[in-house]
Length: 522
Image (tube, rainbow, N blue to C red; front, side, top):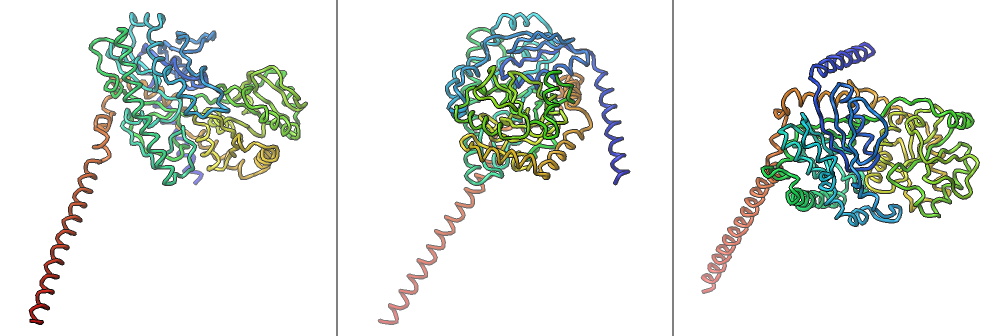
């Protein structure tokens, strides 16, 4: 077994070297990366991809909704202002996610054309690009660049493939198997869960196909931002060469089937920890053997918006622990701050998670945080707030390397019990170590893997030979709905005809029987 393991490692290493050498054969390309719409955490997926391409001497024009002062070789950042409809969302601690997004639906319909019409973006029409990469969601109007330049384009998504986008790669979507990440459904799915999941997926697909895409296209054409000869966005987006998704293929739960055009780059942002800033390192070192706990609700949720009753429970539980607690909080201080708790508006999360004295990560359950916890071998206590976080934490708890605690269940005894269990349960640590071994056991880094396939598309003029015919087949043909409908109709017809014939035969027999009895009486 040891010999086999060593041989496998050697083979994987040789494969990686060969693929990397092949990657360098491509000439430097000019790439337009249109990802201006999304949250700040999405930059953790998009920018590392741009950096890997830049390291291969490609020139990347990167459209972002966030200003950046950091200079990066071969990357030109074009800031696109006023495209963050997320800032108009209500308090997510007290508002249902569907209700919250319904309130900004009009903004979602307008945001793509608003970004496309920005002067800094329109100036790019005078430039030449060899490839367009765009966010799979609300940015389809940027396909006008790909059409005008007659170049291939690639979709990137900072989450797994949503059901509305699965047809773009030809990958099958099974609502009976994989829950929509906007839903907090029991895993594995029950009959009720499968029904809700199917209806929700259908609603999302219809919303995309019948409202979002037509609205983008209408606005784009009315404002003359799209060429007159451009096909409909519905048809054009089906010509994508690749779909790069933020999924670790070997850790996906449940494991799903994909076509060759789906490239998994989950964990592309994960990296080894760097030394902490000196003052923070001194504070962490003073924690001693008990270590410290890190608490962060990410960049999308404002911690200070949590109801006061929740904040008080957190403060009292943290006060009772022997561990120190490092708390990401968006204000300078809070009332009754315990002496073992330190607040900060910004913290180097991966450097903290990679510190040898960390014992537990209390998180909102965002996908990036879960991937980082896996990479750095840290168990997690999830306190999901919104969007995909409930779904993510359902899976974590099922896998046994973390717990989930819902805010409505938050109480002193409950929170403290979860923390102590995770700190002292050896089986949790074993499962964390196993997951870390899986995410580190890849033939190439996610960045190199994604770069290889992007350059593959460039080398092969779009790599359309990888494209599945399922992309062009109507859904009712793809899933044989028409065939099943015919079989059901034939079966029902046979049953009805058989029942009618049986009835007629019984009726004739009954008449014959009654007739013979009447003859005997006479």
